[in-house]
Length: 148
Image 1 (tube, rainbow, N blue to C red):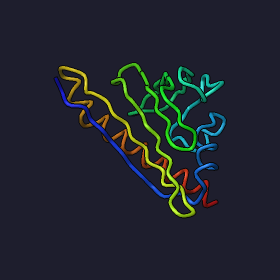
Image 2: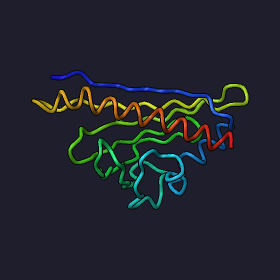
Image 3: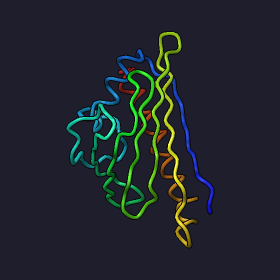
């Protein structure tokens, strides 16, 4: 069995935990900071375990529908959800919110298990780079938004 791949990035953002959490977890704001987001298909709520959202993102040059399910939410501390997308491995996502002085220490982590066979190479190299690039761009977009 192939080992899990975990990608994590962190940045301090010039905003309080409360304001950062409220902004980041509100689906209305997702188009403002998600890289390559084509559209939000559905996301009426994102507040309780079991809530679902579907977004379309451009990944590796094609439009991919991400079907997301909220697993755990600890207001102003943690959001955990899963995503399923056709042609890519299922992933688990974490968003960590910590107050550091007058800033938000925001950490994003994504974990997935590469699929078997020839797709394993694709998942271990191309998907990994695409996920890491997306996470870094997300943090840059949020930093611009909160510094703006």
